[in-house]
Amino acid sequence: MKNTAPALVLIILGIAINLQAQFTQVELFKGLDKTSFNLLSSQHLNEAKSLSLTTLGFFENYGSNENRNFDEAGIQPTLFWNFSKRFSIGPSLYYNSIGGFSQRISTRYTSKGERLLLVIIPTVGYAQQKEQIYIETFAQFQFNVPLKESISFWVNGQFLHVWDEFRTHSRSFQQLRAGISLSGHQVGVGLDMDRYGPEALSRNAIGMYYRRML
Image (cartoon, rainbow, N blue to C red; front, side):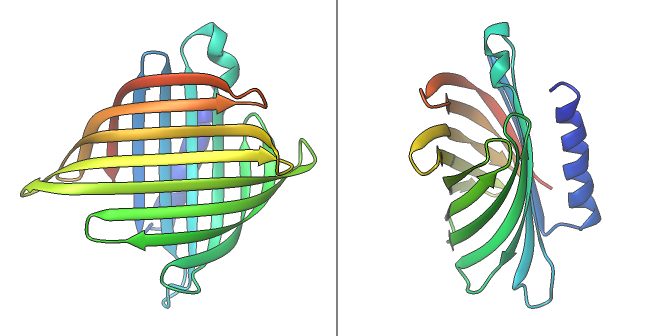
């Protein structure tokens, strides 16, 4: 895991730079027993903007020995066909350091206003290591309130729920962030609530986060 995570970060950064991404968002979260890094990059592939490549990469590391089994890293490029202003569909290849490779197909709903962004992505995937189908629901929101010139207050949330064979809990999380953005640099307080496996083993972390749009 210690060798995998830095390599994944370099691969994802290389993809984002080489594609001259439309946007790249990075976030570092540091709690008492958890450190996580996330990178999200998106790039239009044609002039009509009907095709886009979205790349997600992350790693999570726990400090205590009792939680080391939950250390995790992953990378996921998704090719989206944007058939309307709000709806997209496309395939992806996902690698996770715990679960191995998966082939997936996702639909994406996006609603973007002046202050509120909402994204919902339902997915059906096939996990090679487990040799089984799973379904996944991901949701994200961002809400901002301007305070002064170049300064705003932000609330962010990300939610994930994965069911193996459409019925058994595999992985879920709720990630909440609240902070101040100054000239694109966002700093604040974060809360991660993670659940693992069929028994939904709970691991919670509260800490500070830093987010930057590149």
